[in-house]
Amino acid sequence: MAPAPTWNVTYRKNIGIIATHIRETTPMQVCRRCLHKEYWKRFLVLVTIGWTSYYSIVIGPVMLVLNTVQYARAGLSRPDNLPLPQAGPTPQFLPPIR
Image 1 (cartoon, helix red, strand yellow):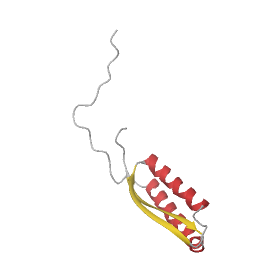
Image 2: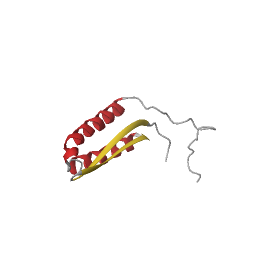
Image 3: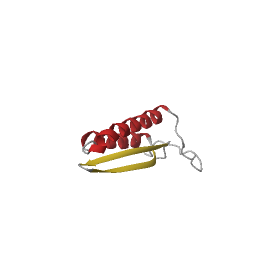
Image 4: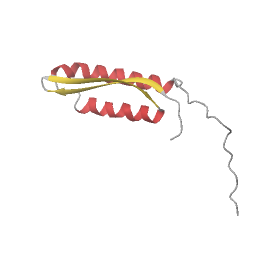
């Protein structure tokens, strides 16, 4: 896989379990493809099982908004880390030998 620009984001996840909940905060450095993938994974958890406890009815939408703000901010901003330049000469593509 080729080096790619990355963004620093922190996504949150909450799973409600009737009278309790499991909360997870994950800071990560991701490429654009993974930025989308990680956001949608947590989005689906929050809208399906993230609201199923008393506490989660309140905290779930808050986490959804925080994740969406992180996602939009990262999607609209420049990358935090650019790939390092490759050492050595630029590869040249030659025609095939007959």
